[in-house]
Amino acid sequence: MKGDLFSSEHMVRAATGPGMTVENAKCIRYTVDGEMLARQGAMVAYRGDLAFERRGQGVGGMLKRAVTGEGLPLMTVRGRGEAWFAHEAQNCFVVEVGPGDEFTVNGRNVLCFDATLAYRIATVKGAGIAGGGLFNSVFTGQGRLGLVCEGSPLVIPVTPRDPVYVDTDAVVGWTAGLQSSLHRSQSIGSMLRGGSGEAVQLVLRGEGHVVVRPSEAVPQKAQQH
Image 1 (tube, rainbow, N blue to C red):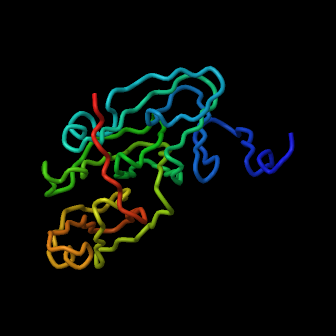
Image 2 (tube, rainbow, N blue to C red):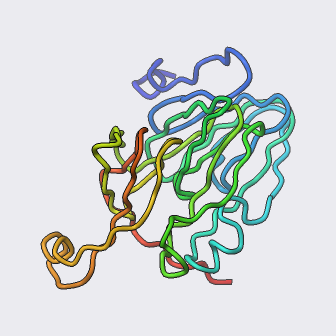
């Protein structure tokens, strides 16, 4: 068979060892030798002796689902083989989490991660129940975390002298050493949104980096059961 489709540009590469790698801009390949976790429905292909097991609501849990309708169900992948993960042709990235690191990420951006990583649910200070989508997952431990982002993300440095204000619908995540809170501004809301409503931004202070998607997230409709 000939043609551009069968060129080396699209052909998967041979695995060099267990774990997570970026196969191309839109897909992550995971060579499984034991166990890993992934977003349910994100597996697009696999080969080898692998078993997939549902893990309930996973990142975000029942609380997040009840408040925002955005629950992120996870699955455990066990065995030996290779699996490819993607989500709506979004861009894929890998974050290395090391001992003492902490990475806070919005659940909608989680694609897959090593079983060696631990995660907990955290809320932004001042968000309360009205904060909606400001329930985030905090990853710690040592391992790799696969993320998706609609478009090419912006990584913005934060310094003690220069806090960064981010649209709550655009934030992907941020590194340890940053304190988060909400900022409400009537004037900015009027100018940017063309109305008189109050705008809410996420404020990050301290020293670290914040990752931002180059567009606002489209609100997801709650799933019907």
